[in-house]
Image (cartoon, rainbow, N blue to C red; front, side, top):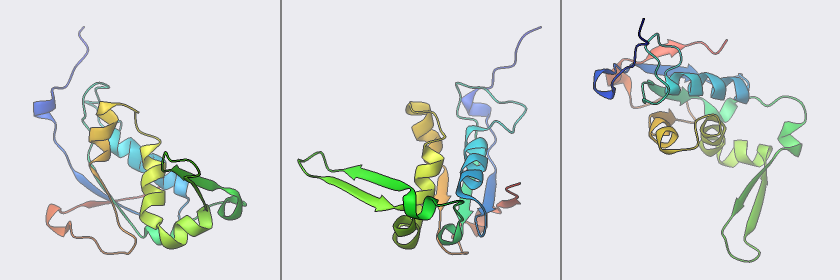
Length: 143
């Protein structure tokens, strides 16, 4: 019996919407990464980008459990001496909610060319509206 290997030309992609309002950041990110990789499909093939498009709305109202709002730090470095920038999770959620959710999802994708192409199918919005209504996205539950 042969194992089925999907071809990139035969991949059928759907659009999904995840509402992050009141949900935990990690649960939203892991669900989005699961859909972006295509692991929910019967035809999942590890070396092919067979995932779907994912829209995450209400990124500004995502939850963090425990003391993460004050203790979790996000780091950026400009590669110049003294160029380290530190931000807390509370600051990220208030000022840069889209970047915070995108970083969480990107960290759960493969760290190679395949992961970079999967990441391009992610769309994050801080409000509850998005411009992808024409694609008829299906609402996905985080649970």
